[in-house]
Length: 204
Ligand SMILES: Nc1ncnc2c1ncn2[C@@H]1O[C@H](COP(=O)(O)OP(=O)(O)OP(=O)(O)O)[C@@H](O)[C@H]1O
Ligand SMILES: [Mg+2]
Image (cartoon, rainbow, N blue to C red; front, side):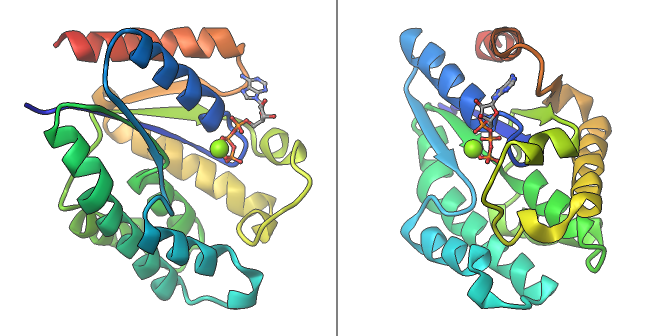
């Protein structure tokens, strides 16, 4: 028996956590076993890696080192959390996955997006989500609502514009596995659109 793997993607403040909580509540209400998780950092090893990645004290982290730390987080997360849950027939709802790695690392312009994908796919053993919901929000709106900027958020508006277009490109490459929604639409409308798509997948 194999479960369902749903990923929420989008820039900082796009509404991922909001919709993830709503989707998980609805799925549980319908009687599904749901595992809510996130990347990076939702394993003991991953939490340590995430601290290293977000800590300004890490200084000028090499893009290749960063990519390998993210890849290590994914490898551990799939191995420890995602695969076992899917094998047990559960619905896994994950806040960020491979696309975030490609979008953020690729936006740094040092590493090629295809190379990053290769590394990420190796790390996950090629596990692809059944559905990725991309919440698309203009960059200034997403960042404008936040006060404290961590190391990644401090990287600048142009960087985040490139992140955004990477996300949209990935969705455009494989439309049957994506649902792209304007992240500043009404929360209830977004929730309903996600439900409808997930319902269809559950029925298959
Ligand atoms: N559809 C929406 N319209 C307007 N504001 C929203 C909407 N959805 C969420 N918000 C608000 O935007 C902010 C960010 O939402 P949320 O924390 O869900 O985003 P996120 O993508 O998880 O952010 P982060 O990347 O920081 O984890 C919150 O203040 C939330 O209440
Ligand atoms: Mg969040």
